[in-house]
Image 1: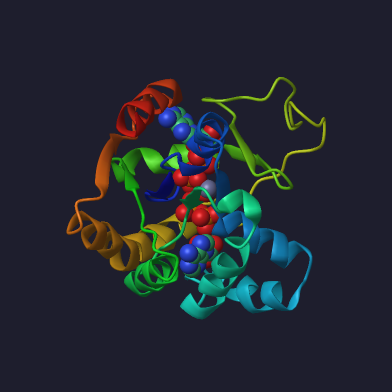
Image 2: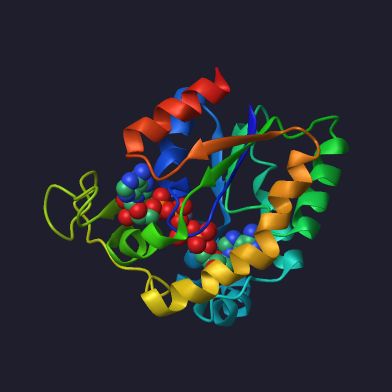
Length: 213
Ligand code: AP5
Ligand code: ZN
């Protein structure tokens, strides 16, 4: 399947992605994770992306479309994929559709992680991530076995620089202005499925499975 996950910061996209990936054997491309890795490695791409990310602005469409175009060439992404955090503007959505159309393909489903903004701050400020795998934990809702340590690798967890209440406000604003129109864009094509993203993770997973079955 070719899936897009869309929703505000902290709505649970990164939490559900690995589960969907394992079950449907797809490739998982998260532009946020890829950009953070590029920033950490100080690649030319990372240098360009860093400032926008720290100011909670979107990175330019050309940069992210380039990353996705390149990543989608991987053999594991030929049969299907999960895009997490992309497309985030209508321009990105149009470019993606063009890319797919050239191969006679289209997006199957857009999962909309609909949620009340009021509960996002607690999710964002309590999040800890394992940078190299993208796995995320939460001090209250999904604690690791040992505080500050990744369950799988034993490596340390970190908090994202943009995971503060202050920066969250700007991220939500960017979502509202630039990404909500993407949901309308796909709704017109009849591709959007609504999730109740405020429910506990396992219940959200069940909703996802219902949509995809
Ligand atoms: P990105 O990394 O994509 O961040 P985001 O969209 O703000 O989304 P998050 O990762 O914050 O939320 P999530 O939905 O994955 O939440 P999670 O599952 O971890 O982007 C970062 C930046 O990169 C952007 O600001 C931009 O600058 C740039 N960028 C990225 N893509 C771009 C693009 N296409 N174009 C331009 N710029 C781009 O959950 C959050 C927490 O809640 C976790 O601790 C988790 O354990 C917990 N949790 C999850 N689900 C539940 C639940 N059901 N109940 C209780 N707790 C839960
Ligand atoms: Zn994420």
